Amino acid sequence: MTNMVQARQLIEALGTAARQAAVVLAQTPPQAKTRALMAAADAVIDQTPAILTANARDLDHARDKGLSEAMLDRLRLDPARLTAIAQSLRDVAGQDDPVGQVIAEWDRPTGLHIRRVRTPIGVIGVIYESRPNVTADAGALALKSGNAVILRGGSESLHSSAAIHACMVAGLRAAGLPETAIQMVPTRDRAAVSAMLGAQGLIDVIIPRGGKGLVGLVQEQARVPVFAHLEGICHVYADGAADLDKARRVVLNAKTRRTGICGSAECLLIDRAFFARHGDVLIRDLLEAGVEVRAEGALAQIPGTVPAQPDDFGREFLDMIIAAKLVDGVDEAIAHIRRHGSQHTESILTEDDAVAERFFAGLDSAILMRNVSTQFADGGEFGMGAEIGIATGKMHARGPVGAEQLTSFKYLVTGDGVVRA
Image (cartoon, rainbow, N blue to C red; front, side):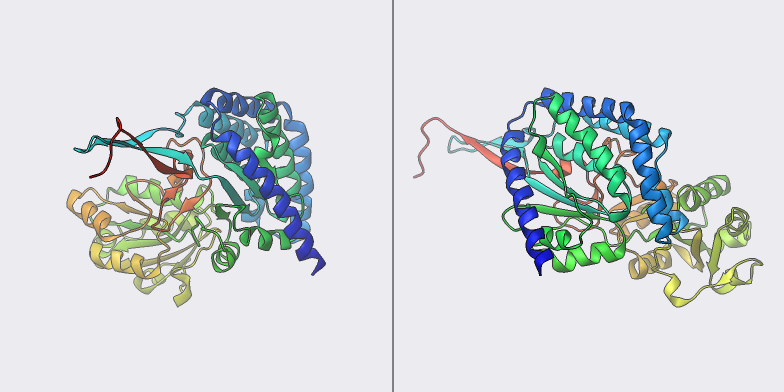
């Protein structure tokens, strides 16, 4: 009970400071935000040794807890990844400022001139697990969109996230902006998560970024709006009209480039026409790359595969494992994805325009691709500089959530002494 009381007091203090900072940020000129982000990027490079030392502590802690290699990969930082984090901060800094952008404008016969313009949401709460880069991504995108943010990183990444957070605060300080614009919950205590989920009036939206357990908890308990995706159950469908070379490249990349990210392919659907023409080449490529292929039907007869269980379809492995089955045409592929998918990302491999359009029209996932690896389901790859997550809901934001998606809008109405009859 004491922990919950203390957690509520902590979140109330952070939330109150964040709301005050949000008032300032909503009126902050773009140049100041750019200065803050560029200075934060410089700080990440300058503090690389300190961040890597902090990350080594986190990795030791994670190994002691028995985290899988895929989870360790999410947590691990190295000079190249820190350089990428710094570049992401600079990319966000270089984007157009969304605040105040005119979405639409029109005149009315009554003499009203109406503009719909982007405005910050206010205070954003981000709850995430083992990826310390989210500290920089979320802080940068919140700042760019004029929002204050409260970050609650996972226990595994506490030291790494704190070191990166210090760089973000250094950027705010360099630009003369409130240091409370980007705050981090300084505890591993899970009571802080519950306190954030109930912080009505202090936090305007919660964004969870992590596994099914975390996201499910947030969606179940949150008393404030949530942008989230529960799982990244991404499918790749090799149509009968797929180009063999393209298909081989895309399938292998979609599964093996990084298995621990939400854009990793978890199910391969092969059209019977493709299988009749090209045989088991896609399956053999995966097996030779070290992927465990859990296959159904005729694919289960391929040496090296493992018979699939029913719950292997619709499962997020986040590992070197993929489910695979044959389908009869695009309509059966669509039906399978609708039944087992999570509305995250699906890719069709085909040279047939009509089939591709049917795939795009028949599915309602947040991201649909053609002849593209699902690993591109990422805000940075979409030109957003970074992302705060992938939203699979249908309200407000869908797909990669960048700075623009972290704004709402308001109407500005002007006239010349106009009165209503």
